[in-house]
Length: 179
Image (cartoon, rainbow, N blue to C red):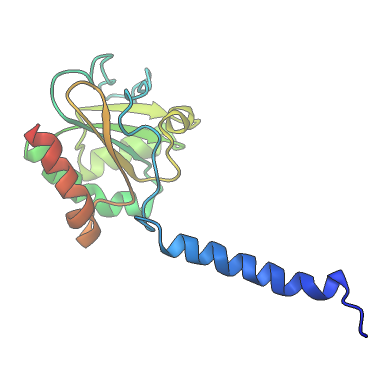
């Protein structure tokens, strides 16, 4: 009788494990979404330092009694540039937006806002990305909807453009504004 060696069994077992992981991933509630531990929690602090020549976020910026967006961005980020017109439009519609520029240079970020327009009520500067870590940001752009009491209501990873923006972000923003 042939003896079965452990090395002969290993490849099919490893393959079966990969298939099981893929199947679990496909049947998650939202396979595109990244979970955020901040939703339902008080928003972390914003950077104390402003981007040069721009207003710093006030200590009570996220508990001022109105829904506020917190947008993490960088001048070197192409998706951030793609969403910029939408941010300007939301600002024009009266939505309060606090920008957090991170892992960027002050000169590049300042030039970008001067050239393309500033959609932010205040702009915090986070050159080392420490504030972004506190917020759980994985890559720019990321936008958080913060309720009137300072509670994080929703996290959106990616640029605010296209059908994903319309189908996922906009309903959450509308819901927050109606509360």
